[in-house]
Length: 179
Image 1 (cartoon, rainbow, N blue to C red):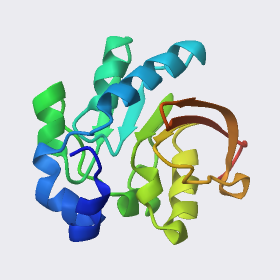
Image 2 (tube, helix red, strand yellow):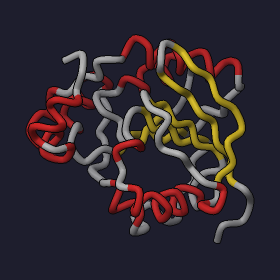
Image 3 (tube, rainbow, N blue to C red):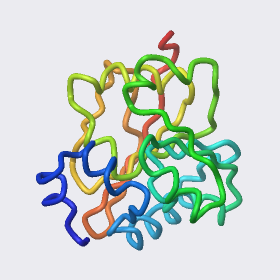
Image 4 (cartoon, rainbow, N blue to C red):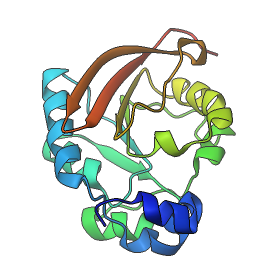
């Protein structure tokens, strides 16, 4: 499925992943992986304890592992697809769960979220971003859109951006103590 938008329109985003999550593959995987390799090396990302947020079938995890990263995944819908490709179990938390503090007390060197944050309702994004700022200082967002626009008032500053074949990589750093 080269363009996933018609499926989102037919089933809704949640409905699509509930129905097809176990066999999901990102149609832009090659671009995503190429861009992730570039930014990881050029921006010297700390990969010791990475959270692959909305991990899909492990497209980002596979690259991060290849680069020597220690990775864990979270996705409420694609756990089977993630396990089949990576051999790892994804925790089944949703963006709402995270916004409600389910990851409190954890600490990651980096959170990578590819092709997912633009799907979060704008009204829910501030609390999600606040909670992510409690568990990492560094967030890498890969998106096929200009969305989401993560605002400094939510605790994040855009540090770098790279574009490859219409896919954006944006590196954010926390603005300091958000607690």
